[in-house]
Length: 358
Image (cartoon, rainbow, N blue to C red; front, side, top):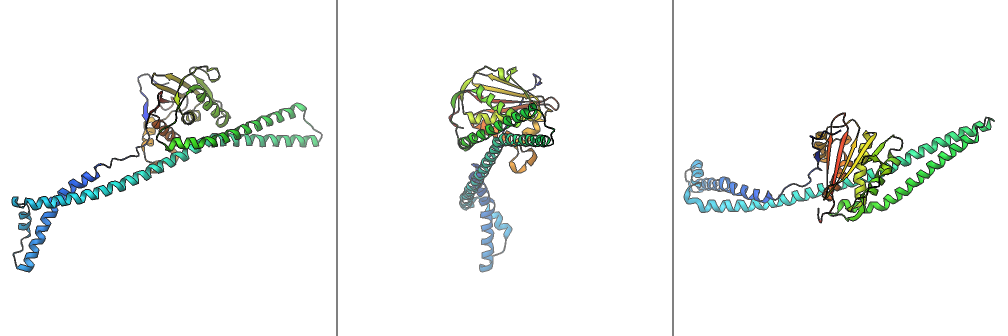
């Protein structure tokens, strides 16, 4: 359990933007300095060499350099400095535009990576469920084949055994059909979700939060974690006993993705999951706690801040990245607390009033 005197660490997505507004100004000041310290003195040295070659004047490079900084040369110094400042300011502006375009391409790459990660997480539960029930049906068919072979050898099992096998086979086939229907529904919803990922705003509508939460949990238990003994409590009661309501504006499909990512991570590492929903006035707070082995939250935070090309593939935390990205769009945030051997606590906070722009 989390001690009361320890605060969860707020997780953040990696910063994709870089400040480039100073490029032209840096070019301006660099050009002024180069014009003053290099441009005008160099022109005086060239002039001294020219007069030495064509007019026979004494070659005095040191004197030419010293003369270039004389007080009566200030008009030429100002002219060279101004010219250098303008030229390097233009160069800085060009570099700014090039860098902005590179950052834009990096941002598009990050968006594409998030979309791929989101699609993978959406279909993973259904794919695992379909594969699992297909394997079960195959095992049942193998059992039935063996029993028919026994019948052929006049060692026929009782009707009860046949009936149980056929009943289990029918149940698995029904679940497989239901999973296929869910997959069809998800395919219809993908367009809406991709729009939510790539747009600057989300279409929110007032809905009851609890049915979305319970549906997300049941989907995980019914498909992805069907073969694992997982106990889920909601607000201190069994999930099926929940009768609470909490209505506020949110985008249901996006919310389901966030909840499934966080709760799915908890189910991966723990067998007992405690979910608490708190109405904090202007924000809704969802706490997801497991009894797993725990982790180092600071290490997780640093890993999430790393650019994609510097993270290890096995620890990229794409599900958390998707959740952080979606929470950032709606003005929410994700915090975490954990100690090795003490489980983990993830806290989702979303505003009850949707933001106009993100």
